[in-house]
Length: 475
Image (cartoon, rainbow, N blue to C red; front, side, top):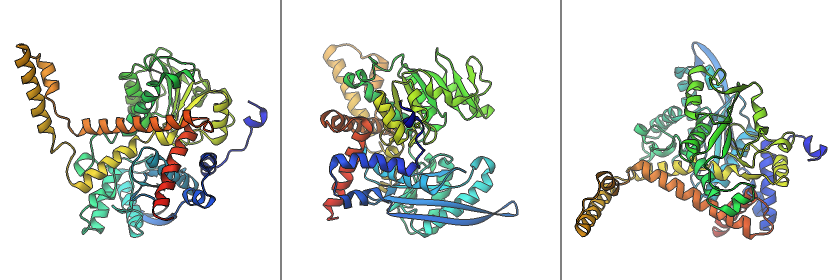
């Protein structure tokens, strides 16, 4: 890495996404007009409003960006963060368009944010703020069951989605599909099982699929599967927690490091992710966690030796100044935009494989799609076929026992006769989505000599689909 590379000025989030876009667009030889149409946000709405809290009037600012309407509704979460800004919202909306395209979810891209630190407000005040923000977006159709459907993001949960859904149903009582105005709702309010952990589960499935291809793994200098691989996770929020938990508990990987706001934990033998997470919830941070070395400068662990680095926090965490010191073999982007354009080039030159964000963290929008389908069809998954599957399984058991003259062991018989419930179907659909999407990206990566990495391959796959959608309607 040259001195010039290490000290290049940091570009905005949108500029980083656009430069990655341009790289792929040049490979596709897109018409300049088509490229510009795909790149730009179609609409941006900024709203300022005031809410009386504890007798005092407080003002807030929020945004909703609609990037692409090549498919409807447009989809994208609403985040609450005191660092939120318009540039971030535009970049995230663009990534949503590319994300939905690459995993074949028939949505356009959108994103929203409210400039607020939710930790500074109690539930009563947050509900007032959320409902008012929702009303402002609904009035301008930036929340609508058929054109723009939000979901949870950083700083928001199923609770906020329930408040937004109730507000929409109050304002639009004639909409028979009103419950589909947001996804990520509580299960009792039209949500779907498996949505909370969907993004982290998708990260697991995406990394797992990478390791199913020995030719791809060999490019990293590693071999074999995930068992025993050393992982460092930055950000033990919803995504990082579930990804680290499943990779360690189900795939045998060792999470040797966890990076959080107040520092980092390091244990070369492997951390118990569940225990670290529960400590964080109870203590408000990871400092003081027993049986692990605490590192005051948490982000220094981004440069610690490991097999897989999973940045699952904010954008721009790996940049031109530290990319040359990253020692991971694989950077798996669980967050949106954690690697800048300059850092991406440095990592590529050093032979470090980056599994791109808008593929790897697409589990959330994939399961949101399942929830939206469930809402507009007004029936839960598995309701029609589960008992039929169980009867068929029971008949298979009967046939086996009749043909062999022996009784099928109880546990085996139970598994054969078990019908898939909603969670089984959600996980099956998510894994199928992640596997097929990776294979499409991989095919482009390996077969097109102009494509040097997985990120560019993912962009090529996504842009080709979006361009085709526009061309087919005569644009």
